[in-house]
Image (cartoon, rainbow, N blue to C red; front, side, top):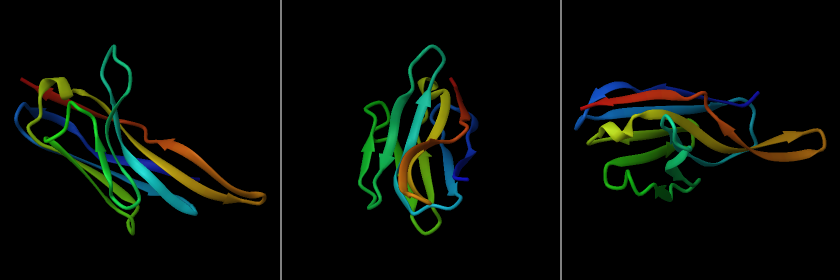
Amino acid sequence: QVQLVESGGGLQQAGESLRLSCEASGRMTSLGKMGWYREAPGKQRELVATTSTYSSANYGDDVKGRFTISRDNAKKTVNLQMNSLKPEDTAVYYCYAVITTSHDHGVRTNEYWGQGTQVTVSS
């Protein structure tokens, strides 16, 4: 069973840093795009950052220049370094991955989500 397990997050003061990590586990044929989305109270889930298999990164406008995404294909992990945190970064952060799995009748590619980790930034 494929799953994404997140770690990191918590409470931090504005201007400080936090690091999120996510590991993909289970039997998979390939691991494609990975990244992070966030959902603040009363708002829709939004892009934070994604990275392709070859580490081409894409960032949401609100985090450009402050957050950095990285991945380790061998370890099947994706990390998010969050610097210069702001109170508006407060949200539940979800790990995301596109994973291909093999089955009796072929392969299947699906999007997977982690359970979410809370990030709270105090002013």
